[in-house]
Image (cartoon, rainbow, N blue to C red; front, top):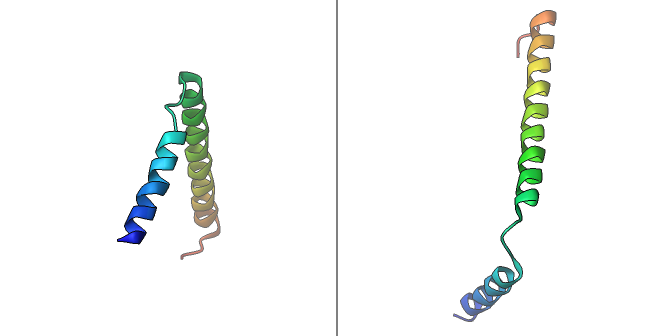
Amino acid sequence: MKMIKEKVREWDRVIKLSRKPTKSEYIMVAKITGLGIVIIGAIGFLIRIAIQLTGVIL
């Protein structure tokens, strides 16, 4: 029971410190996330092309 009360206190502290992001912060996070997705997709695409060109079967 003591562990549950401690966890609730920790969560309460985090919730009190957190706030809703501003519009500019939200847009920046969305851009960075989108860029990360594009980069990972490009890396996967390049690996697939390299495998097709070399004929290596994984």
